[in-house]
Length: 290
Length: 220
Image 1 (cartoon, each protein chain N blue to C red):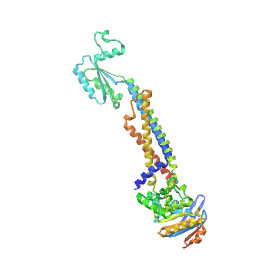
Image 2 (cartoon, one colour):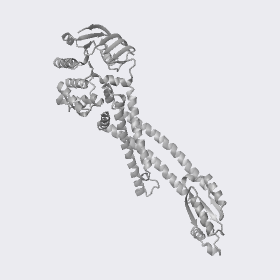
Image 3 (cartoon, one colour):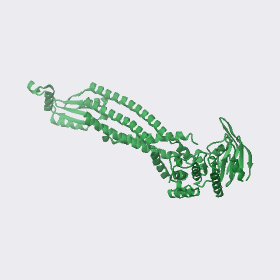
Image 4 (cartoon, rainbow over the protein chains, first blue to last red):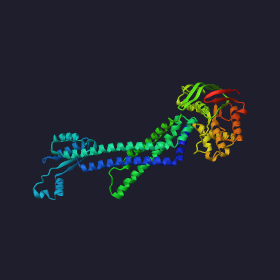
């Protein structure tokens, strides 16, 4: 029955203080909107940089004398190598076509024979895309029969990795500061909401309510508030993504709906931020009430 | 049931109570008489553990002020009914919800709460006002609501702080009559007042306070 009191008081509390409640919901919404947009902006930036970096990480050129068997063997080895997400084979003819497309000249008309070698283009998974791992892979490849040369654009790769690292670090620090400001602003807003309920807290305490019975309905109210605030922020983020797609004509590679873990994270963050913020405010007030 | 032993209470502005020693038994009716600032409200606050003595001890229903834990204060208060000078009615709740609050805090079932609230509202003649809000009631009616809330959970002790301050003599007599009726059911009543006329008419035990000291303790 005490549970029914807690639930009823939590809901009554919302009904009786609609305006402060709505203010707090909007404060949580705005706070989480900033956090959510920040996370998505960082993810999309990293994705864009990653795409700009290269279609592939390195190219393995094969000897002209490499047999079909050796090529198949190599393809199998590369495919099974841990951390490789993609492998494309380019025959001598494909290489000639690419040369033609890039320089506008037919290599076969310049030379009698096609001098361009066949190759494998290899792309690594995000987790394995480090210079150390790739250099170890190159060393292994160079020892295999049929491999002539492995070209890895190390300088460009390192520079892009550096930029990504910088973006990531700045974004992490910025997000941390935003979250800190969010927590502070929301907590302050919740404190004001609770301050308006001083009369109720003092009265029920005098009528024999334990600290738990005073705090529990507010904790529930905070949770509901956080849930609404966070859900609203998710809806606004989705709307922003659609607006970017239809009005700015940019289809973002990372969208919130493709990442339920981000949605869940925002909602959990909203619920815990609000319920704990409310709890802290009530606890602080109870210090002044015997 | 209630015992004050060598109780001193000092405020920053000066001493409020000096060396109080007295006991109040179960079922007793006691008037605390004195002018404003004589210490009546401080004694009531110490009984419901809203104030604690600087020295000495206040024992209430087997709980000792020097050792009581915060969670036990709630238990003591569930056994004490209080009618405050300014009523402490929640302005955003109707009369029914105000009276029901002590029962709901204790987790009683909804039908028990409904039945008990109706009964007490009947006893105090405020049944027709249950759906109203405090600001819609006269001061006398608000007082009866505060009294109904104080007795709704059949407390062991009832504390009443200056309940007649805003009432005419007829309404005041009605309140006193109600308090005696409550006392007859075994509840101890401690009634703080500065109404000398009332004491002349009523033979109950009276403790007279002057500047925080008991100067007279007239037995019933």
